[in-house]
Image (tube, rainbow, N blue to C red):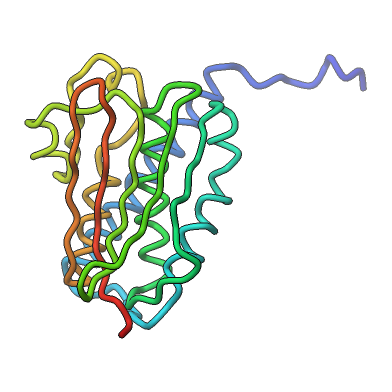
Amino acid sequence: RDLHSFPTRRSSDLTIDKNVDKLVSMVNILLDISRIESGRMEVQIVPSDLIKLAKDVGEFLMPQINAKGIKLIQELPNTVYAYFDKNLIERVFINIINNAIKFTPNGGIITIKCAAKDDRALIAIKDSGCGMTQEDCGKIFQEFYRSHNALNQKIEGSGLGLSLVKRIIQIHKEKIWVESELNKGTTFYFSLKLVQ
């Protein structure tokens, strides 16, 4: 058969596929949130190298970072051992860094830092993106919440990722917070208990 006689995929089919993928992702996040809230999620909090995990996630997301010409700065010590569930904290890093990529303009900067403070490892993920109002900062971890600024309306998202991130940190009995200013970027912080 002539190649031209095969049916081609219409743009509407591709749009449907994309929307199905978004719905599947949303359902999976909601299921994870439900498992956490009901205590049905299996959690293994053990001593692990937090720096290795942070660098592995940075490497994993490098194609998206490079695609926007973003500079990734990792101000990290060689090793920091803390107590955490590797799979869950990996999701925390991926969600926050993905958000930073989305909201940082081409040629911007994302910085990942980690420092020991008392008996805690403090992680900071900073971007040079559009920033948020103080009102947004107070609501950003709520399910389905999305900032109402003009840029945010153009960027796809379910408003669930940060809600899941907060619950994961709460499982670890730790804290997560955000500092931001409009047009001056955003920094997410979270803590984990250090291995002494």
